[in-house]
Length: 533
Ligand code: F6P
Picture 1 (cartoon, rainbow, N blue to C red):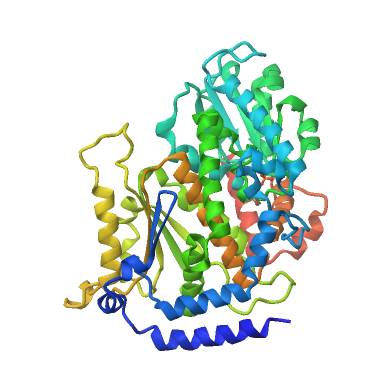
Picture 2 (cartoon, rainbow, N blue to C red; picture 1 turned 60 degrees about the vertical axis):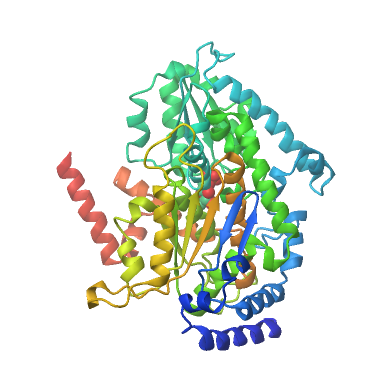
């Protein structure tokens, strides 16, 4: 049964929304000179200004009540202590244990897991030495010049984002490449430039069954020839499949089964980052994530950064019915952050039944999109400012100027634009010809990092992970499974067989039951492909 108190608070929030939604953001600032001080938070060199949002103290109180009625304290405790909170798969969700310092981890509930994590960390250190390109690989005797990471989804987005963000910390000679897609020539064209004697592959796949990754891994294995024995490393929870594929046990690094794919960067799935930038950088990222974990675990809801972001997200999504949320990064180094976070939010919270299988009453995850804000200003900002819908936005900006490696004259340009855009969205411009009117009253958060380091990036990642956790609690869903991606994959397998071989086992059944659109597209493709031949 749905908690009646929660229903009551939802009713009160609806009423509160009706009473307050017409109050303009600018007026909230006029009414309260302390608004910025009151509604900003600083944690681990991350500063959050959430004052440019359409709420007052009463809104926050109600939203916090809603969170508490969703058993926040209990679920948070269960998350950190390793309870099986992924109810559909009866599994713990233990990404936070990956970043706990050693001494704490060994005393935690996940004692065995902690020991395994440390053993894997040791393997990571060895691999980093072998692949850094500083000295020859101890087995093949060749110096590794290029490392190719093969993985998709969480096994690609997070390490690729982090390597991009922290590129200026690179001190090792070998080059890191990421390949995620298959069938589009991505790997083939990269390998045309590389030398099999000097290239290593890291196959990152928790299940070791993901089609794209395995297709690429097979191609890589053939390309390497005999070198495949010692130039392929697997990062996986499925050691049996990796062994079957031909990867020796000493080259297999474990992702614990209890770590969800999209939360796996802090496991051995972060190996590409550790190889590319050094294990110290990877460990610094873990330390930053751990600090945010501690904040999330201990701070009161009103002072808790992930909680605040989650409450505001729910406020817009469920009461303003604003179903799109932009993540706009005013630092080119963070240009992949929105892509990374898109999976975290949408794969976790894109659900329409609650954790007991009942239809959810209301909307769940908004559409997450965004990217490099300076580019976005010349593309989609038009819609943010003058489009017919309100799109809540997170601006992410860094206070360091590029990095010390790039002392450039145009520094402070990103920051100037960031502050200007959040102001323009809020203020708008009313006294103008109709086509120039900016309605304004459009809300935003600004998250400023003192400096973009592995530490602050780790905190930023954990901030958004915990935000998603809190939203999922309020919506009552299981944020940790992802059955929604399976059906399309099954159909694609059948179509793949048919398209490739021009036939499949249950061909007559399959074709007979197809709708005319899908059948028509397949037939058209086959005709064009034959003509192309
Ligand atoms: O298809 C979805 C998914 O399972 C994601 O959850 C995951 O990040 C991605 O595929 C890759 O999975 P794996 O690491 O098992 O190859």
